[in-house]
Length: 412
Image (cartoon, rainbow, N blue to C red; front, top):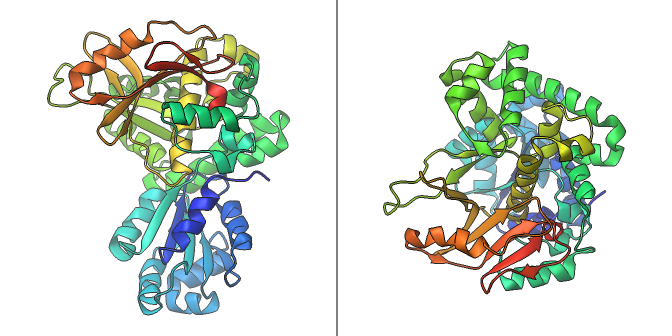
């Protein structure tokens, strides 16, 4: 049972809002997290009900008011997207009872959830996103994890918090290959293929078909594999659709579901009116590298590390860890990348206030001293450029220039 960084945020939010919503893909530990937080709370005991229970779901849809008399707050309602009728009833209850922390909700279909929240609970609910276990959580430093920004203060704090600054290459790729789902981490590599095969089948049956009525499972499986093969690359809908033999509209609809479900992340390019020559296409990242490695059929960590997707998988893993560092602290991740028509590129830009922090991700233990020159392309943006980082496989943080530091990926 790993401590989760988001738990401290949940307690803080629950003291300030009547309704808390935890969203994220299936099997990332949303229910377990709220159960642990409920036990940690000093207030009254919190009841629990899941709408995976068909009887509870039927009552919630047929008579929401009676449902909330049967299970009274403070209450955890799991998978609330199955009974959107509850949102209006919850609104009435929280408007009568002015206490905070009345309802903790979870949901795996954010596209359905947001419609009900927008219509009924706007201003009354705080929404946080949970992904699989982060490296900080696996290393038992969840409480010390904070959003990544390559400042001297963050690097010093990460160095002090890290159990080990150095993580060997194959240890990193074993983590990338296995993935971050808590149940899979608990069971180990021997169950990996069975877990992911079942996960994909369950996901198609319970989520995608519910939303898009996708009945051609073979085509959707091909689509998942094609998307996974493009992790870390610029998104080209036409090429993606052609490879799967579907039209562009279908490809966009299916990818939108994956994005809204928290399975993929589209990293947007940074651009301003001053930079007309910049690429406008987003980059695509799978948020769980284990699922991406399974879909692209890498049989073990060694073959993945030596294979053609090695660099893209490392970049995908680093980007997902940075996203977790923000989302698991209840914060938005203002992340972008830079690429112009001259093929000059910066892997990641982190925007904080009026400052951009540039980041390169490299599969190397001997980073180049030229990173500062590579980051100089950002000077044309008209923004303050903060200190930069090269996230790589060095054993400890090393200054590459007065403004750029090589940072071990183990610090994330």
